[in-house]
Length: 317
Image 1 (spheres, rainbow, N blue to C red):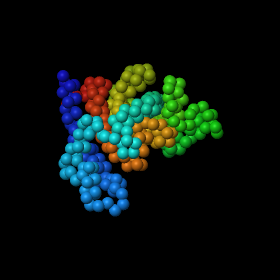
Image 2 (cartoon, rainbow, N blue to C red; image 1 turned 30 degrees about the horizontal axis):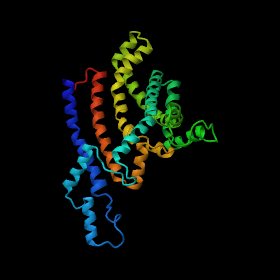
Image 3 (cartoon, helix red, strand yellow; image 1 turned 60 degrees about the horizontal axis):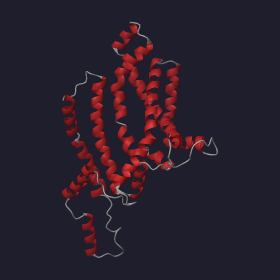
Image 4 (cartoon, helix red, strand yellow; image 1 turned 120 degrees about the horizontal axis):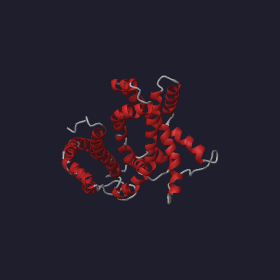
């Protein structure tokens, strides 16, 4: 009952965030966005034709009514049709979001798990050569542009100049073997770029936790290093780790890997968003921005619940 009441309070507290984000996106993309009146009219239109088109587009309606219609689209998840392709936006999301998840989740999971493992290892050997090697490698990885990493991995693993093991572009997946072939190179690029940031963050969190009094006391009592790192360090460092992981989820689910999908020609929601930005496709952009705001609210709720799961001292108030 306490958890249900807290969830309801958290969802209600997220309403101002959703309204704020949707209001800003409505102002930028709709109210002050491109005026499509003259795109639909020929040369030298009459005032009567202009007024008729503006009425059909709803431009002559009051601000409150137009914003209310925008919120209705958000609540019903009916964002109309794409102005570029004519496809229903809901159908486009239903088709592209699973592709983005299939593409991004492996790199997201592997990057975070490896980051935590390397952070633990570096923190255990703090200020010694393993720590310096890992942190130096992380700094090098962070300095490499994501685009450069994508191109490098593609040349090495997907071109005739390299190993030519995997497809260069596309997403022709009909079996698990096909999936592995298409997802491997993007996953390696995602892990390579994310690993440096993840490792440095997790290492700093773990090092801070290792300086706590209870860890020094456990070490003084002769607790084995593996047990010390897992039971006394990692478990107590889970709150910031969960925060970092959870608040990355909306970008993985909705935005996908925009650069990777665009570069490799993968038909996910990231590529659809990129195409919508290029063409000014408002219905698609409205859907992506609004759903990202909703996901942030849900992630905030789930994050607080996970805090309580890993640390009973956290109160659901």
